[in-house]
Image (cartoon, rainbow, N blue to C red):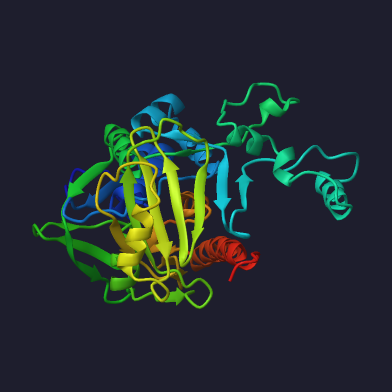
Length: 413
């Protein structure tokens, strides 16, 4: 320590309990979303480093979103036109479900207000239910703005007219998740976020507290931070491999455990909705992008082989496949703690639900929102950590039950 340092400044430095450095392990969508939000909100007050390896691939199939993504992008100050252009994106008014209730049946889960206008003190759906009981009235989608627009392949941004239905159009996006991560990375690095290329080979824990003390890379470099975000995907390098946090397995409720993803040539019609088609052992997604169409079959290996699933997927594409189907294996569930000591798991490291309602990227966003709301200092207050875990668990369990409803509210076996 220099003898010329100001004693008051030295005392302030030793007593300052603010988090000064955040290390994000893993890039991809969750890693760069994390870096982007923290960088935007904390600026240069936080030293942010993203450690990722080009040797380790990312899942990168989370291409469909829900309307809250617009809040996230807006907080970052992203220009929406630039975002859509850079990610080869398209607009989304909802999700179409095909063959779920019964073979040949389809409906759209539309964003925004579902049904017509409320009348007086009575909500619209009460009138609709009474009409249906009387054998009258059309399908609920016939009264839903986003459903009608989606089926006619139409989209527009809302107008600045609050009293008009055109003033409250709810929408989200389809986009290339890999391009989104690269787009955010460029923004982050321009704002001072440091990216370190390297593979983590060892995690050192503090012998007394059990907190993560440092990471060692294959190059021999040692990296330290005050707070660590685990964005390492299913393997959970910090939250599970280092801290042994544990995992709640939900396979007894949602037995789907595998997926195959494959892009195909883009259709000339960019339908403004995601499509989910029920198959014999799971369901198939279709996500229209500008440069390609994303497809995948999410299924349970107890009821269909991988080869049969691949054949089913390839036989039901709208265009020529652009690659071989990419396999993914997972266990539906969540970590027993999302925040453990000085590690917060974000994205797939925190848990996984099949993306039937496009919640994968939303979980990243909601986890980051909770982290910012309860952002710690170096004391890592247990009450704040417990509150974060309660809120995030509620989000996961509520979404889990909604996914279960899709399989239960059906006439199919």
